[in-house]
Length: 591
Image (cartoon, rainbow, N blue to C red):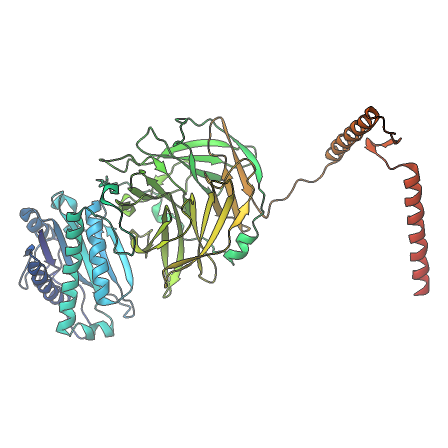
């Protein structure tokens, strides 16, 4: 059993060391400080009944400073600390449930917040506003022990008329308290069973031997340009039409290096994304603790690698996260998975607004997956109830895990939604696209073991929690493959697909499937070259016939090209003359 501290927010009549006496008030006069205390009492009772050791920071209408509240947990050496609050807003239509962690929170705190968020949502039935992060004094890790997981739950907005009425019902307050207790108990149970960070979802559990527990590092580095990052990009008019418009055969271009690599089968290009004038290629490195991003200038005359970015060191114990996977850009955000190959992975987000100075968007936004790899991720946005949400899909050997964030750029981490099993187990890229009708699609790219290069389009049903595949589409990458370094990009004119030839040594070939590419005009030089080739072929044919003793037809050459025999020329000339006479006769008869 665990040691747990419940903190009823606010209290008393005066502000004390950063803690206000009261914050939100309902239309009928209910005070947040009174509601938090009532809910906390139910949470304490429910947790005690489950055998946990529970303490509350206050049991009466008094106020404590933020550090003093955290000190209760620190003194008790608590396993979990949950501060209970209610939201309020001037717009009385705003409603939802959200849970907060500190900007520098540990992975355990994120896991606790996720468990509490899911449990409370079942009690409130409100919109999921997700797990979010910012600087909160009561959650500051400096005030807690390293073992304490800490979060702050904003249960509901008490400023709506409907919620005001519900909060007068003692049974509803009890349900809220018990939901907080259930979330904490789920977290404790998962920790005890070694299943940290697993969402409550319908996925086949993996054997215990295939689980690798990892202690993740925490990053406090935030991109200096994070506040200017573009939130979204213009959606495609119709994703199916855009996919259907991709040419079946691409056009190759060569990009200069050099790029150093270990030279083994586990060190190679894995993902490809396009950002303005640059390719962003994720590269796995078996001998290193993390992978990297290759930044390649794709402008004509500048086609070369310009810089490399080593990905962060994600783990302090356990395996190395050196296999950077299939990635995707949306706006100025690049989502990159890094897996260990031992059922553990991390998904991180990078600000690429300056491709020559790529930085992690915010370390607190990372998705830690302690029980599953992640070969590829896709990211998009969609609209629900007039609010735009961020959607992420992580693919691993036939399982797709979906996550949602109400405001990624505002510091709201992704929370698990649901998982789907699909038949295809070898996608190396899984991209998400949303069209103007707000339909979400996933696009899987892979090369089969039979050598086929396939694109599989899935329509994603977020309500029914399913993915429905269209028939496979096969492409001809001509020396490259839809397996390593393959991706889709929404350009100014529409959708374009690219893929590489796996390795980037002295140079790399990138194949582009661009329906808007302008083919080079046929020049007189090109025509002359084709004529010369045809003449050589004709000459070779005559020589072969002569060697066999067969009669050789005499021909004469006009501008390097074999001409028809004279008889054929005369026949063609007579035919043209006859057609001309008939046309003139017809024209006269119609005057």
